[in-house]
Image (tube, rainbow, N blue to C red; front, side, top):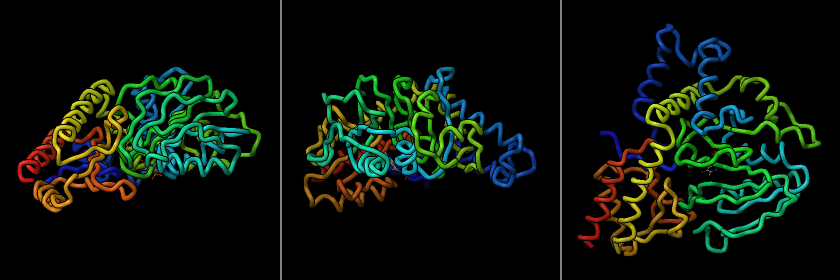
Length: 354
Ligand code: PMP
């Protein structure tokens, strides 16, 4: 039986995508060769790469607006360093909304002055800081749009002339945004886009080439763009599955269609958390993430029963991150609303038993 997969990442992918990907591992579109045994320079893979790059821009409405999409390796964690290496000349600003922001800050400090423009650390990152001032002399401001661990999500983004860099690893392609407000967006594939192994970087070309330091080729966005994201052998499987997932999303109606479904899923679980006294949400209501719902059980005595009920119903991957505790239900694009329904039924059943 297929379980209800609430894993925070790597996480659920659409079934049709996994079927097509497994077929391609044996025989790519009937060419008599496997996807993973052909040259990345073959016309078949070049077409896959080009499709993946154009789908990413198309889904975000960024075609023809001076942006390039490239697929890199090293995870989102590599981008913590690479963004600073390519963009930080003197001073950068960071909004500290959790573990991943902190890791980005640590790397950026290797390259220049870093100011923490705002932080919610004092409250264990249970909300998104608001109404902060963005200094005008920053090379860029770095944001984390969705905080996977804490279940908080930025609903509004600062209005500023400073270039915006955003880690969208855990909510890319999940909701409508004016993506043209951002100058650089990065996201590890392994939540809403594909398997682990590649990171999507969408960058506005005119922000590049402004730092004075020398940049090694593999860390230079400009080099990857010039080589059509083929400077070296790319992670072909991860890019192929990402392409299929983006095509799946496009066929579904794109980001507007999935946003509506994601809102329905989130409403379902958050109404249960609010109404059911056995559960307490972690994140501040106005900042709650559509992707990761974090919550706890108010009565410790009911935990074992809840865990057992989840196990029996095939609910998988809801254990909270160690820095928050409790539970975290990740509801990425590919998670069917029925799975959220199963979890919510267990929650209301627990209330009756409690
Ligand atoms: N940023 C965010 C928001 C994340 O959720 C994660 C991983 N969970 C990362 C960065 C790090 O990603 P990676 O493991 O791909 O380096």
